[in-house]
Amino acid sequence: MADNNSHNDESSQIDSLFCEDDIVISIDKSNSTDYPIIFRPEYDIRIGCFIKHFYPFDTNKWGKVARFIQESFNSDINYIKPEQPISNEQLQLVHGEQFIKNIRSRRNLVRTSECFILYLLPFDWIDQRIIRPLRYQTAGTVMAACWSYKHRLSSINLGGGFHHCTANESAGFCFFADITLAIRNIWSACLADHRSPIPILIVDCDAHQGNGYERDVLRMTNDENHLNAIIESDHFNPGLIIYNAGTDCLQGDRLGQLNISAKGIIKRDETLFRFGSRNKVAIVMLLSGGYQRNNAQIIADSILNLIESNLLTPLR
Ligand SMILES: [Zn+2]
Image 1 (cartoon, rainbow, N blue to C red):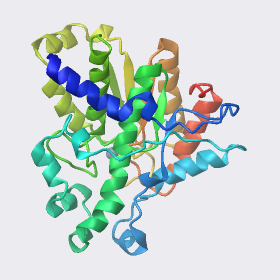
Image 2 (cartoon, rainbow, N blue to C red; image 1 turned 45 degrees about the vertical axis):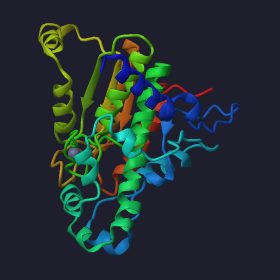
Image 3 (tube, helix red, strand yellow; image 1 turned 90 degrees about the vertical axis):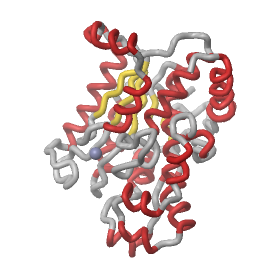
């Protein structure tokens, strides 16, 4: 990662993808109700009523969160939009050739989504309706992370948080390793800025373990980092926090099987953002798991609470 060639390659990848000129921020400068919230309507997975019968998760959660936030304001919020879904070339910063080939493997699609009816549907339909939205969400995570690194302010991607996907294998409805991609992009940006990679803390409050990035980050660790992590664990001073704000810990979630209330979710998010504010550390919040019908409203209420508590800085 540190040699000159890879440095230049990685820098140019970031420049082509995520430099500020490429970020479409449609902001009315006189409007104070724009926030660093990343979203576009293409995040939603539109699989139709028939397939929903076989797959009873709320695959329009992301759009609903955006709409519920919007409805609470008298004026429109302009979300920051990832202009393009993440491409295979951009995925290569983390994912290998075989992984990228497997995106088109039906067996892999069914295993990752745990949705057996996908065996019966044309690949192009699956690609447009399922894979493409998740590519947009992945681009959104990287965009949020790069934005927060650059501006040292917190941001929220209304999607992403695919913490079960490793560099080599998708799993548990996590098709792309967006968190590892975000970290690699930030560290590449650090190198492009002629500084050491910043320490990044991942706070994962999803009901399940983030086994994907865990494996990937361990693979990036050398002797020195490993020993420092042990010796300096009490003095860890993160330059950025990636917050996987899964809501499958909510009461009634049959996958999470935990018992956290809506109030508890809102308090949880506020507590972490207060920590970030107090310690001047930017947070990149991702939505991750939680697909009950009531999740979207609770997530929107929590984000509105962050805004009302002045924990998310408006764009000016
Ligand atoms: Zn989960």
